[in-house]
Image (tube, rainbow, N blue to C red; front, side):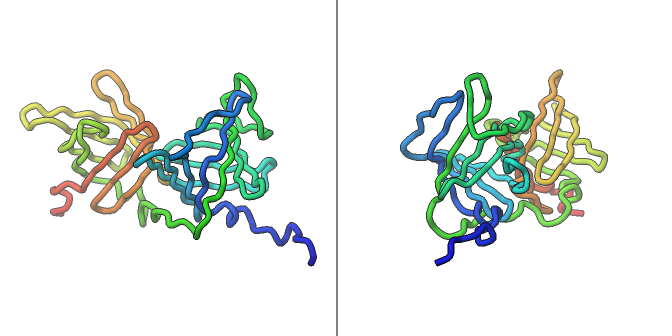
Length: 245
């Protein structure tokens, strides 16, 4: 039987699709201990990904491969935060080296050394069919879908704005949050931009500015849900005033 040639090998875009579980991790030049159960997993398919770690800890986003680069490169966005790695396939393993800091330079080799922020991780494929990932978070132009007034469903714990607050996104990139009882309303103002599936939101509260990058989980004419890597989230519904128009 003739040996497989390079042309017979599946392209990276197909090969990377599936569910992967963390097998080993190295940093500072040393292998790091891992939990025996509940190890982090990645689900990748069609440019979309879900990261799972522990019970109920889930992040969503996108990925893009650059297989022509040497070493090959993968760029990820998870809950609004970017991460860049070099990658390779080693048998049935997916090997990544890099950091979850979007500002760090890409490594040129698959190794870590003391004093370096790099991590070297090996994932093994979880056997099974092609994973079913959440659909794209919106159908249409997100810059248009976001415009107008919304009501916050978030509570004071975990949410960025209090439940019952009114949040308005304007066409000129401003965001206005109105909160509190009718006789003691507080108004906070800031700015926002949208790039891909990421909202870059800056809100001035008192004398401080809170800036968050949030990945969009769902954006329709009636609902906006977005979450950040650090745990902040927006859970908005279209205001009654807007619905009545």
